[in-house]
Each structure stands twice: as C-alpha cells, then as structure tokens.
Image: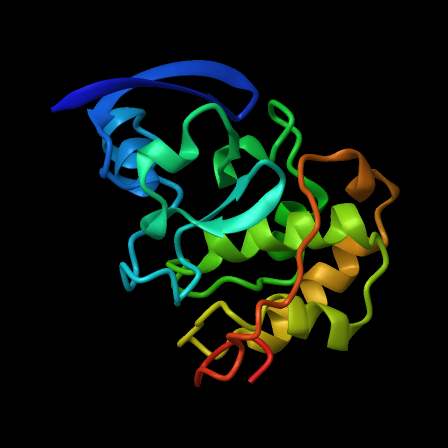
Length: 178
C-alpha cells in the first residue's frame, strides 16, 4: 500500500507517494525523475547509487523509503549551484576523470562529502574515502587527481556535503583505492 513520504531533495521539500519498502533510489529515479544516481548492484556495495542522506554518503539502493522519510537527500544533480558546477564536478571535467560515466555520480557525491569535511585531502585520503566505489574503466588515478584538484578550490567547503568516512568495505576488487 502506498504512503506519502516527505523529504528534502536537493534543497527542495518534496512529497512522494511510494510503498514503504520502495528504495530511495527507485523513488529518486522513477518518482522524481532524478536519473543521476544509478542502479549498480542493488546491495549497497558498488557505490553507483550513492547520495548524501543528512549530509552523509549512503547507498540509495539499500535505503527503504520509510527510513529516508523526513531526511535531507542530495543527489549528483544537487551538487551544482545553478549553472556553476561544484568544484569536484569541474575538476572531473578538467582531469577527464570519467570514462564510461556509470559510477561517476556516486563518486562525485562521496567526493563532495569528503571535501566538505577535509577541503585539502591528499591522494591516500581520497583513495580511502572512495574505496567503496567500483570503477571498471581504469580511471581511478584520474579520479583521485580530480578530487585532490577540487580540494585546491576554496569554494569546496562551501558546497553541499558532509563527512565521508571509510566504511570498512574497501576490500572489493576495482575500488578506487584498489
């Protein structure tokens, strides 16, 4: 049975009708038309669907709507300030850090959270923070360089994001820190 849920998505208060056990990812993509977050594994392990939930990176494919109700959600679409890209988005363009692009939205969201907490991370800090993200294209070095580059921008700390902490799941093959 559908219920009405309220949450704040990219700074805008939204009401959505969904089953309580529908995933946040499904509601974002199908209910709200925000297609930036991608379905990857469906288990919260690959990072393609990461959004900020109350400022913390979280896998949207693994969060039921009943758990997301009343919370603030930032998707990759919410990182930019109008036509001005978030520094990490601009750095990804400058470093040509995305190849196929499938994993990039989740990586951008997690990187923005990292930069909000640590505006000037070194490469090992970036690799550890992004290790849960699986990238099969081989762009890992450019991704790390892009996040370090974005950290040089003074505006990084003034953008949406929150603390990003390694979650102990970084031992999967293909992660950014691998």
